[in-house]
Length: 156
Picture (cartoon, rainbow, N blue to C red):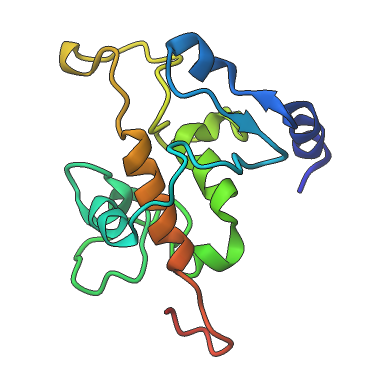
């Protein structure tokens, strides 16, 4: 991790995500590079999370990411492979990246699934709406946390 990233993470530690508070969305606290607490206060459902990730009209994850989805054709290669992501990132780290990855990387091309800040060209149907709800975010986090690889590199 570069020094500039480390310095930015130190500034973010224990800082409320301002965009969420201003937008009237569920307020949350960033600790390091994660949102450690569930947005709903309850764990998500990994089965529903998998469906959101694989749904090309809802989560759009496979547009950029590939992963352990043998039934899905034409997976993306613009972003990190999701295979084993649950072994690389904590649930809190996954949550922050889904809520608003711009906090960690202002130049990211990943959508902010639970933020309304900085949206300049949004059609009427989406004005004032997040891409995913808090329960959707928790479902996706629960699913991604299950994606781990064993010592042989086999995804489970």
